[in-house]
Amino acid sequence: MQDFAYLFSDSTAAWLEGRGDARFQRYERHYRADRATAESQEAFDLEQSNTRFAQSFGPGRRQFAAVSKSKAFGALATFLILLWGGTALLSSVGATQPIAVAAVLAVVFIALRLKHFGARANHH
Image (cartoon, rainbow, N blue to C red; front, side, top):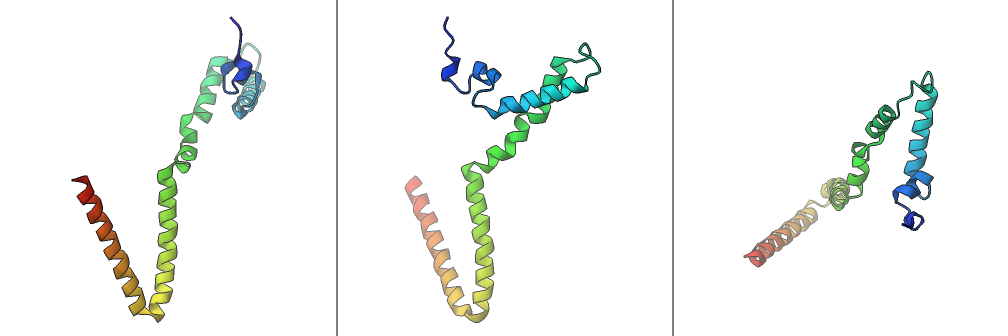
């Protein structure tokens, strides 16, 4: 059987050869550090080293990165930034022109209610 691993940058063979994947360098550093701290070559346990590596760099460590790239996190971050900016703007403009701010808020509220009502009508 022919090895086509060179075609796939994320294949196991490519990973073991260190091609196109930063995870290999991280594992290699961990492996060499564990090997250097072992008192002797016989004292080094590869299985325990791999378990420690999985605990250190496992899927739980990448959870924040995955969450921060999600659409929900982007929408929430955008909402919070707009909320913060809106409250700062409303408080400064509201002090000088309270009637205009009240009118804008009323229009936004009515538009949101109409949108919500229209979405509910389309679902039934």
